[in-house]
Image (cartoon, one colour):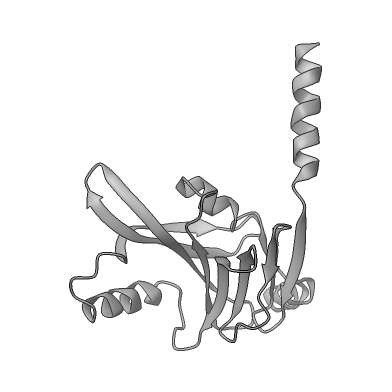
Length: 176
């Protein structure tokens, strides 16, 4: 009986988490964002999703000067060198990631390294090569709901997918 109750709670909770799918045709991808986020149409730099009409949570934008996701690390280090003394964008970790739809990328955790035992993440940048060609960044900003790197990953890796038209094009190109 306890098992059935736990299963009911688990499945019931899963149904409460709704998402809205936003296609980003210029990049050939789609993202489903939690229903408590909305697209900020006044934003002119990429796609910005906010909570409560003001708190930025997700920004997806093209990096037109990059040809590969790993070039973003060098770009971030160059920007860091231009702001000596700023501790808010220290690179805390770099790792390879892959979305559930198979899109490989690199995650760069940036924030403040207060001490060896205390790290404060401000943003995690996920860099991917778009099916349409350009590299893009899927930035997740720290908020009250994001406490661990897993929380950040859960907003990106299972939610970013290749648009169906691009998946068909990629399959045809791979199997001439």
